Length: 193
Image 1 (cartoon, rainbow, N blue to C red):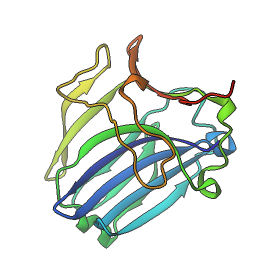
Image 2: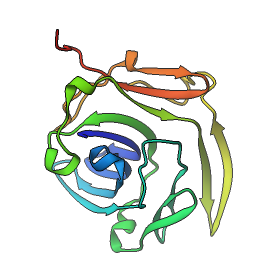
Image 3: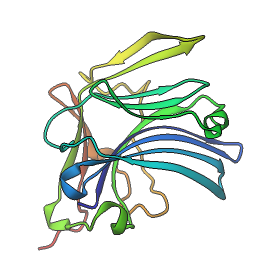
């Protein structure tokens, strides 16, 4: 509860924000996924959010999450089952290349993600692999895959920052590779004694 495990695409330059999210909420045994498209100016973003409930916990085993982004739609899948497709005008606002990102964090909004019990830290997010497919005129073409045998500094970076309503500061020490998995740790810098 209180923790989010996320994968998202992101672009924030020139004052315009473009983001597509998959966010697993820890509350209620991680049975809710928040699917978001966030656009707008840096000072006035609009969040087109929809909660998805696959009917099982997303925390006990690996699942395959897929984002499809085309000029016509954005779709969210879990284990090849489509849970949402957005064809609204907000898709037209996604006009820039975006970068891939993973993070795990604690929100300052317990009504959204549930209350955090810091005595339960550390907690972990495990990523087994990621694949990227480019899209052109109705066709997805495989471009690359990372199986996380090592940390690819040319592809990924480790954060050292935070953002509004995030109760953690990202730390490079909390990002590791273990047994072919990317591991993101959520730790308490001041654990109770």
